[in-house]
Length: 150
Image 1 (cartoon, helix red, strand yellow):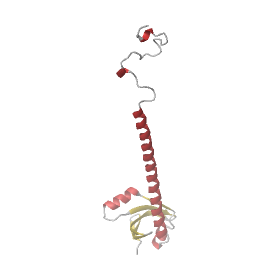
Image 2 (cartoon, helix red, strand yellow; image 1 turned 45 degrees about the horizontal axis):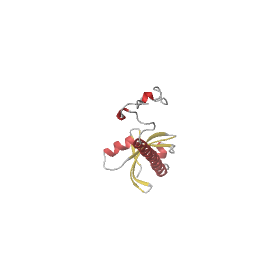
Image 3 (cartoon, helix red, strand yellow; image 1 turned 90 degrees about the horizontal axis):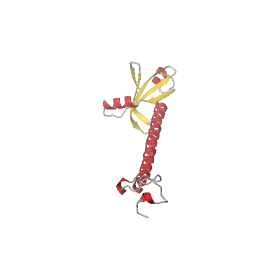
Image 4 (cartoon, one colour; image 1 turned 180 degrees about the vertical axis):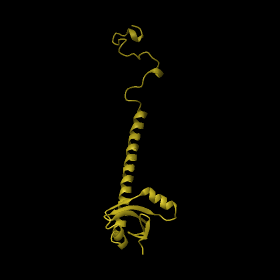
């Protein structure tokens, strides 16, 4: 019997079409190389950690904006000007991009909130937070502006 693979009675020509090809032309074995497996495992772990960090960041952002909104509502809900213009504050929402615009016009860190109540709606702009109290606050209703720190 010769070394010709096609003369092997236990290996018919149709069973392995790549038999006899040089090593550099042979396909990779199923399952890939060990380096590919390591790369996929490390990539999967890093991808999972990245996803968890993103979810935690979004959760922290939502929690912090909720705490700010609660502090604004607690401080100004019973304010006489707010009661006269809006009534009790029913809904309060942080307006992120408006806050960024306000901060770009000044050196202070402003937070802009959309507020609404049974008598109307407007914006409360706050800055200079000390604990859970703000030292600067303005209510804007339409074209009217009211200083809430008087």
